Length: 288
Image 1 (spheres, rainbow, N blue to C red):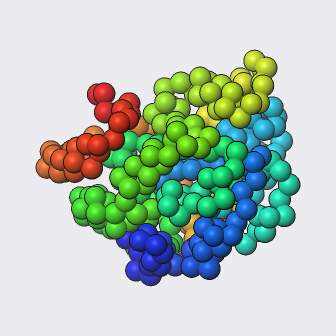
Image 2: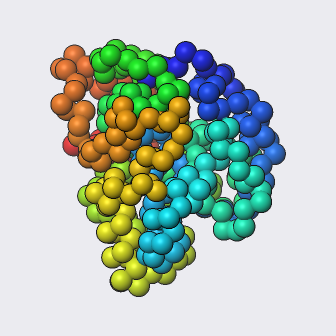
């Protein structure tokens, strides 16, 4: 899951094939966030595509026309990767934007705006497994032979996205200062309908029961996996080659239990306990 060609920017590293310093600098210093903007923020492999689909369907009152005819990266545009050359400033409001950026690289203007952001977090053990399989289809990453080899790199933050712990700590640290809704991938799995209602309420978007039903149905893993506008099967093959493996694999939680050895679990648990000891926030997986 490492990358041979890395770009270092303000203490974080990114694959230079899809990021460049000028774009990151522009997003951080100059990009003007509007009060009507809605951001989906995630650490990689934590539910980005799922939230993008949900946002599309909510914005269109459950109508599936857009979600079935427009690629997902054009519906909820990515903020920072340089491979997306769209002029974000030209988009009409409300803009729906997606990002993997940590809090200290996010646009400065966000923190003085009324914009809203949804921060989706996933059990880092499952993130690690998903990152491993993602490296098989992502042309900008070096594929590692096994998850055991990836574990120490993940714990040191030497993977796409940097340190999961720093990313989560950073965004949790500003949750009382900005309009931030915190969700977990596991909550989406356990109660998609309830999560859709929470998101709709957060956005101030009223949906009737039929619209909610449509959002829930069409944001299901099965529907999205078979939707060519959502599963990245039409994306650039040099960036994501889904012939080498599915971009959307299983859409489950707890898969890490099938991959972690007892030694890996012990190592991960020790690191997690140390890194999260001062965080006044309990996730679903912390209570298991």
